Length: 416
Ligand SMILES: Cc1ncc(COP(=O)(O)O)c(C=O)c1O
Image (cartoon, rainbow, N blue to C red; front, side, top):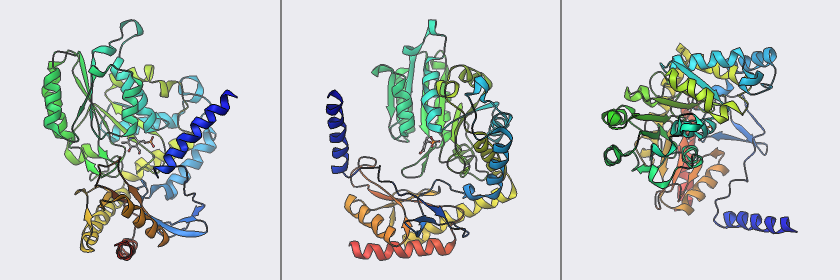
């Protein structure tokens, strides 16, 4: 009987979500992909061009990744069999960690099941940072960019800090960050500054060099320093001339860099990389690393193959093609009369629509014309900033982009 009441409460919550038209559970299920140069997704027997995938280099379809996945799976088994410290640590995991560290010019790296899992553990661990008897939780100040990803917000939430230990700086506003650091200097033993590298809603890039300069200026004003944690999930693999993300783009370096292998790497899983003291400590304390399975050996093999492709001449070409596609798209969509919400040179390009109903109508019309994009509405973006998020890939051909823009123009005529 009690559970009937619970089910009523849960059903009412789902009904509220449906009424607000923010439901996410009606997923479009992909039945397969065509084998064209830019594979199209097959849904309900019809072919669709994806302009909303994080696979910015198209690596998930790369033969080297598929072969490496199969080879690792044959060698080690389909799954890890246990968590890392029991018997789930394979040579392929270690090899991947070493190559991630070297790719980002760091001493060590740790691989997790996802970047979400990295944030959940790393933020919490860097807040406490000592043995149970000498917790310093209340002496850490966490400073987070206003528009950070949900995994960072939840990572801070699970740490359960009192309100006064948490601060937010205005989105990408380094003067505001400086103000927060200044106001709190001497009050806390340690500060953590956490930010996305690329912000996924608009494709904006945090200038890591300038951010780090602000942080460094305050490092000796906190007994244990100011630690920077950058989650560059959308930047690693596809941003910067060598695909090393925002650090490379801005010639900056943070203390702990978090990335995912589930976007530009075309595989799956998350990682954190940094100095060995941080990583050794995290291997001893990060719950989602210690008590949760690592990625499967096959996925580790695919991610390692991706890392090698990205660093090869072929990878350089893929990165150049992505940059060309982004530049081409930006020019052509503006010529077609649309406005971009921000100027970004990342694969994420937001078309500003400014009205929730119109974004939905445009997304639906594009779907009917066989193109899939994502509409982003309030409260994810401010009121009046509703947008269509377009994500470009190295695999998009010029004619795909032309066809997409023509479809946008046609659809817009019907909406106006
Ligand atoms: C900034 C950021 N961090 C973390 C994630 C989650 O990545 P993963 O799918 O590896 O958990 C995302 C994905 O949307 C992201 O944009």
